[in-house]
Amino acid sequence: MLPQPTDGFAWAQAPAGPALVCRALQPLADHVFTTRRWTLGSAAVAIDADWQPVATALNVELAHLVRVHQVHGHAVFVRRAGDRPSRPDADVIVSADSSAALAIQTADCVPLLIADARTGAVAAAHAGWRGLAARVPSAAVEALTREFGSRPGDLVAAVGPSIRACCYEVGADVVDAFARAGFADAAIAGWFTTSPQPSSRNPSMPGLPRPPRSNHWYFDGSTAVRHQLEAAGVPARRIHVAELCTASHPEVLCSYRRDGNGAGRMAGAIRPRTSNRKSHN
Image 1 (cartoon, rainbow, N blue to C red):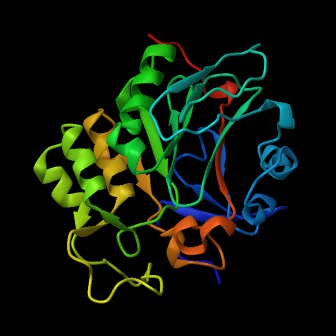
Image 2: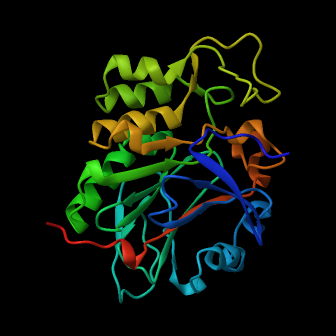
């Protein structure tokens, strides 16, 4: 049985397996959040062929599935029509080229997809805790604004499955990284708790320390994404979070924290639609 996301999301059955889609994003851009049952989900070290079902789902050739070498930073790659294939170091991809789809991979980190309801430009971003400390969501919004004339108020954001505070234990170095990055104490307190936070949707995975270890916290990365998007000007009503923890659902979702080096990968992928493009006036 597939786990139940929030109402802003729905399960779709693609030829490669079940995929999660965001209802608010569907009218604006073709997109998928893939699952463990896709070829990519069983590939601890993915090869190009593992990405073919993702390209097929978005109706592009594999050569037009734009990916980057993810480095847990906040660098942005801008894809424009006619660009030659490349795979630079980056964690954010932005484009308005409807001949290409953008894809990032995760196995606990937060996958973020954004579409501009006015211009049709899109973004795909990968954010682990290092990327969130580096403000990846803001980098994605700023890149769409700078490169394609987007306005934050016109953006719709979908935050796919990622590891959550029910399962994700981190040390003081992670908390300290956010403090050094200048985040307010109140924000940090809202993202880190001293004990796991299971729910009916996301039970804690087996093996967590009992009782919780001192000087360790449980991190809620998807809430950090939401708050950073809001700070960047995206309206709260346009931000949709699936609220599915990757570590909680071993039959459906990939998790490096749960499965270690044998974990597969999931994709967050999005393709602009030419019909969405309007004047920037």
